[in-house]
Length: 345
Image 1 (tube, one colour):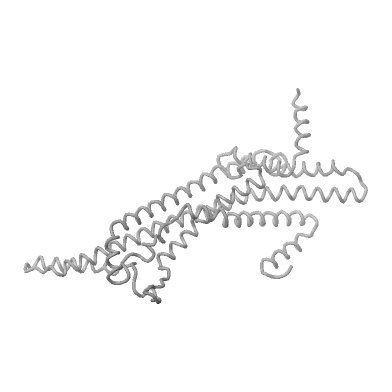
Image 2 (image 1 turned 120 degrees about the vertical axis):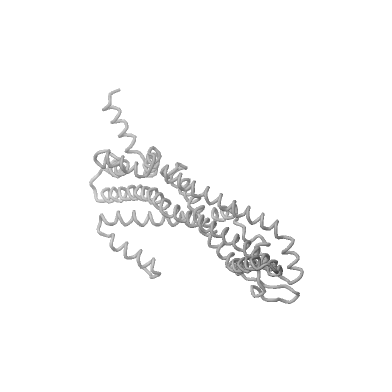
């Protein structure tokens, strides 16, 4: 079989491909390159743009519409134009969707993952400071009671108390002012600064997990399960998730160790004065970073919202591109702008 015959048969197959099948081919091509930049460099070196999967499908889909409605009667011309636009818009939407998801993850995934990891490290430092402040206060009380008749020893004792004073004010524990009394001896407590910090950190972690799950939603629904992330983007997202999981595990392990050390003391304080020197929410387990819980919640809520937002942006851009061909793009863009501003189109 000659090369020309093979090319002819390939053309006959390609002209029958649906927009989704072209998009899947494009996504599969993504995965043949080590990185996003390498893919686009390869596309630029491939010769005329119509020879690449970035642009070749448009001509093939146009030919498909012409084969479906070849006549010159007004209704056939109208049907051909309508089908041509619909097929090309569908492919353009999927192409934009795949490319912009990669770009979004490359930008937001790395930044939010780094922010979350830094916040977790800062949380651990804050709690370590609280533990050291507790030790410093106890040491200061003990040293204060130990007087010395030796002048040098006494001077060293005073120096030590001065040094400890720099740490004794570091305190994140429960305070009487953190809650209000209720009937029956109960108290209503509001979140501490550290709890609010943890909630914000959990939000960043959830954003990264939502991206991962949203990609799966897009792949299953629009690309028949084919992966759409470039290899370097996928590896970066996976590494970010591993870093967050490791940071959270380290933080949770420290909380567990801390609880084991101070539990008896907290219980005695609770019985004696009604509240303990534990950090607010610590004994209830509210400081723990529940990675599995965050992942489960994002699978139900955040991921779907993320996927819907990606799809909407891609559809709007594809619609605008198609309408620009007929001069209707400005009207569409203006209507979308008014809609985003909360005004009626």
